[in-house]
Length: 182
Ligand SMILES: CC(C)(COP(=O)(O)OP(=O)(O)OC[C@H]1O[C@@H](n2cnc3c(N)ncnc32)[C@H](O)[C@@H]1OP(=O)(O)O)[C@@H](O)C(=O)NCCC(=O)NCCS
Image (tube, rainbow, N blue to C red; front, side):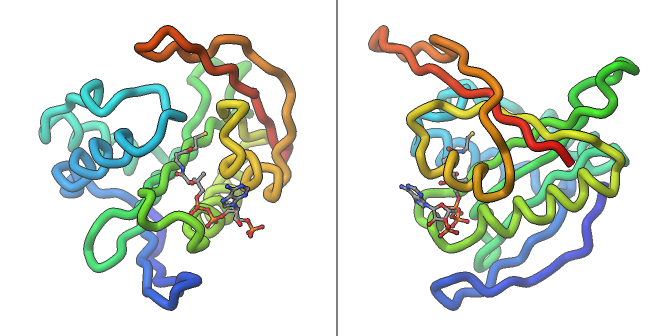
């Protein structure tokens, strides 16, 4: 789904454009994902595992843009992608149509500027308008920054999964399932 382009002012006074993705963003998106995934242990993939071709990524972005119930938001600063987030239907089976999944990432250089909060507000509004009844996400239990953001917007922990992730050194991370009723 498309979202009207907006410019917001960050805490450091910089302008940040929030807009929905387009297939033409594919090359920039691959570059963003490779940098961002290298900056955090809290997401499911390592940078090497984000191995889409530009054509493949453009196809994914086109599907996201054209899905009337999905919304993928880019935050751009000086023409560079600073953050990406999305709300997508949990599935197509009739008994899960009321559930949406949420994902979010911000490049480290742009943390604590209010981008995560600004994207969250727009994703929640979109999910409400699209008829979803709840938004769900998973977050590593030690990811305090993300958990703070989710609790601030009304998400509650509804379960803990042991060993949701295993790292190359053999260590594990547990994750919380969090849910917000709309
Ligand atoms: C989690 C993440 C999305 C937050 O984005 P952000 O743009 O920095 O968020 P905001 O600037 O809107 O800040 C959100 C809140 O977190 C708070 N916060 C920042 N760092 C914090 C920390 N270390 N501990 C607790 N709270 C923290 C901020 O103060 C703010 O709260 P406030 O509005 O009450 O002051 C971002 O850090 C990120 O992408 N991290 C890496 C990827 C990731 O973990 N994604 C989530 C996977 S589930």
